[in-house]
Length: 229
Image 1: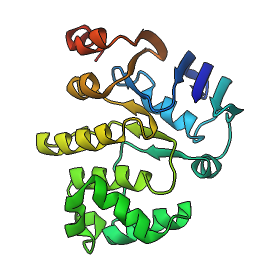
Image 2 (image 1 turned 90 degrees about the vertical axis):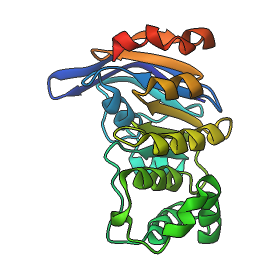
Image 3 (image 1 turned 135 degrees about the horizontal axis):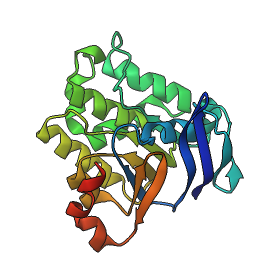
Image 4 (image 1 turned 90 degrees about the horizontal axis):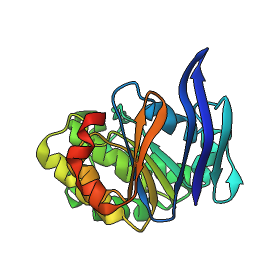
């Protein structure tokens, strides 16, 4: 469904990712963990076309997409939820969803139905300015907005970072409900979330994949992963 092969990415002369290769199957959730500066965000930005690789290939549904503009990748079903939790703060929650619906070509009623299905409480916030939402509510809005249209691959950067435990539980539930519906590449440092949801785990260290874990018993052993955070 999706493959990265021998990917090198640099900021100027500084190589950030080196010889990164991995595959994601249809319906699979692949988690990336690693310390700050390991290259996790750079990887997601490169997949989404926001950065150009120095070398290597990115293949999506059998087609080479390295260097393809983000708007074209969006039209092909890729969605990127950035770490910064940026919403259109001066617009209402409903208007935020309407923008995503317009961009994807999905009817607004259907988009709203999807959003409230994954997080029913959002119905109470539709008329609020998105800038008034809590950090957790903004994150849920962003994840839900990424589902508008017909996404096939979600790229989500640190979905639970800095959030209260009750909101983390909500996001975990949303992601769990998405399993088998879409494929996902998720950067996450919360090992409880990784343990619960991951089909495979890739550990980035100094811009390289230091370890790949595909066995559920190994993923469940979060103590073995703590040294990489």
